[in-house]
Image (tube, rainbow, N blue to C red; front, side, top):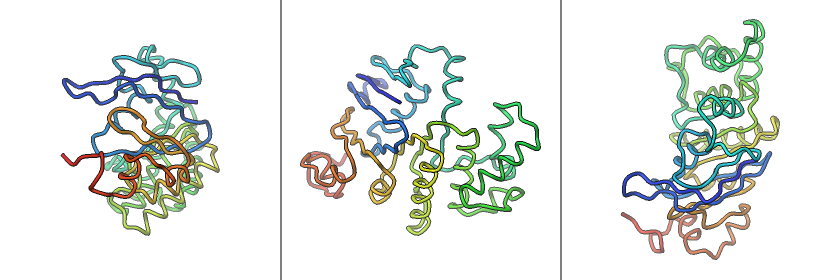
Length: 248
């Protein structure tokens, strides 16, 4: 579904992506791991067309999105949903209005139809009767659920997760992990997850890509990465200070 070919991206003298290659499978969850500042978020922004590479290509179903203009890219983006790290709910809107937002912006559905979809999407993430609540009345875990309900409101094919368990206690983090697994399966989504939470990565992923020094140095199933002999992967997954990944 998504193919990244020989991507290069720099910001001034900082070379973030250095010829990166990655294929993301349809209907699977792929997690991208790596140190803070290694380029994971930059990679996501290339996939969704918020950044253009200096060299290389981003294919979504054989369409090179690096060649599209903004109008064409906006059509592609309708196939995406995104759960942001901080949920990114609109504080001035109710929960129901937050989930309804993409439907009102990008569809011609009647209000009665939108209301029903909002109820269904919230139910899909384990929430009922919360449509009239404000985000300020909700816990961090509930906000994540609302954010996911909004991300799947338009029934996207691809959902991007940016650090989905950050700021959550271990129990709520596990609840979000299970929710990602169930939502991916129930809606047959192609999911891309950025996370530093090793337990979360092992729980939700079909495939894991290790990003280091601007390229993918290892790609495989959770079991394959557990058995890795790559010193970069071993050090990152174990959290060991000693190894090729230096602390700056």
